[in-house]
Length: 180
Image (cartoon, rainbow, N blue to C red; front, side, top):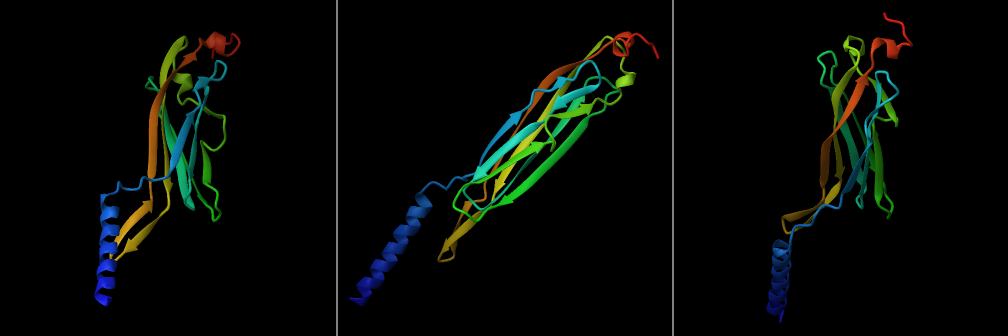
């Protein structure tokens, strides 16, 4: 009888391990969406609106999310502008861990194009806003008999480019008729 119990326990353990090994790997539970503001010029000056927001969630207790951007225009006097931001969150409840990160921190963000005074009047600049977003969840490792299986520890990434135009008006239009 004792040998039968041992055999059935070994058989059950082998079936459990075979089921774990043949089952598809557990996918990460992290979810992420990125919402990009459409870059646009503010008035007729050098300032433009930009930014994006990363929304992330997971059922696990730890979550990090953030992103980065680079804005650049096609004139040699205009230098690239960049920024990044990331936040972390920890929860101990039964609800989902939800994190919202705005990049840059304050939205709507307004930034001036560098080298604006060196750009000739009546010029259209082709610009682009390259953005990235990420979310990384914590996780656990479950082990039996020296074999462990990770659950969670997933990462989601996304990125893209938004093209936009900036108009540099003539000097007379920009400052009310006075030419510097």
